[in-house]
Length: 561
Ligand SMILES: Nc1nc2c(c(=O)[nH]1)N[C@H]1C(S)=C(S)[C@@H](COP(=O)(O)O)O[C@H]1N2
Ligand SMILES: [Mo]
Image (tube, rainbow, N blue to C red):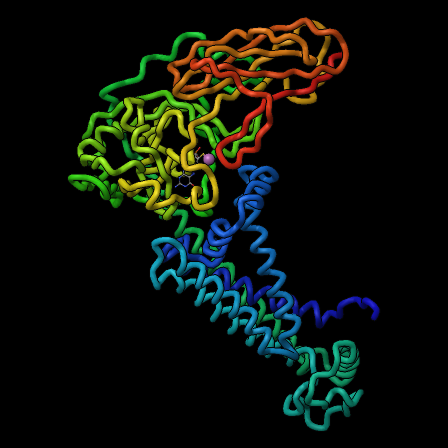
């Protein structure tokens, strides 16, 4: 078998497939925008994929692509659809049924995925079914145009007394093999031109067929761009309307004290004490950020309670708001990793809300649920033990941004995000751990997950090349709700040296630290470890984030010249 260059006929056929795929996705985008953006075929399949991927693959994606894992997944899905659509286009002339079945099949799979999302109804399948129909229809239309343009012209189109076909293939009803087709095409065009005569008669039958194909293609492209673009515009308008723009939050009844002076050492390259909201890490399973207009938002507190509660956003704002400094950390953070951030949160006292509902003695778990169906299991006792657990509506002096959970999210100091920090929260059910596992517990992550004591070197950066002399080593350390008591640094495995600790707002936040050093030229390895207020020092043993958080000392290697 030899590899031959694809003929122009084949390339045009592939383009027809791609156009059908684009029209299909474009129309689905518009339909989904009119209904629910999450119901679109790509988000639906992508979300199902996220929920179904085994932990190792998810870990790989997070390690490799970081916070770009979602765009990478969407691009991958689009590439897969494009490839299948192109193949469908190429096979359509001779095998129309499998080609159409490919596009319809994709749409049906997407429809099933959309229907199967948490909280989805029958209508959620509609955009994908529309995609299937539009894909099939446009592929068939383009196929018909392609056949006319690239195979034997129908005798009816020939001028009376027209030329005898140059080859037998021209009158053959069955499709010739690809190579013949291209030859026929070339021969045909040549013959037509010779016979056309006056330049004013521009359209030979063959050229007319080509023009029809081009127009059909252009119309399909127009449909794809218009519907896709309109879908985008509608979704964008809805998103900004639902994002709480113009919403003004009440002043806190219980404001946070000003940050202690010196809590931010302001060393270049060191993470600022308060993470600017725009730089705050984001971790969630949402391919499309849930948009819940605050006027429609409701929070239900039910399950093992004496008095089920339902709150509107106004009810929430009518309660006294507290402002608290709390550092959030993700369990998936590797040693030295970026998934920790500090913010000043504004919210209502979560414990008071639960007490109002009256938690029954049997309940040991708060199963919180987000607008997109994600679930999270928080131990009841951690919320009721007096710590500053919040139902937060504000972050760093502003309304909670959509990516961080607008209209409301949970924040519980001392617990990793996956067991405490439900964004877009709409439901709190008091249950038992033994009865109802949450999203990540089902996938093997620990049921209980207090944040482990950790420290990170921010300055110097790994593999930095530095001038000899005084070297500043600086970073952050956290042990939320216990507090960091000491940070030690060592160089090249030597003795540990106490770093200077900056003050922090409270034990629920991280602390900055730094240490100055005289270093000799050469390659050096810097290591850090923290000790929390219970006297526990970070162990050297490296453990992966799964199933309850990484351990080990962060180290960086630098070269001093
Ligand atoms: N609805 C919802 N809330 C969620 C998650 C999620 O996937 N869905 N992820 C949690 C995890 S694992 C973490 S670490 C924090 C991160 O919060 P952030 O994105 O605001 O930094 O949100 C938590 N809340
Ligand atoms: Mo997380």
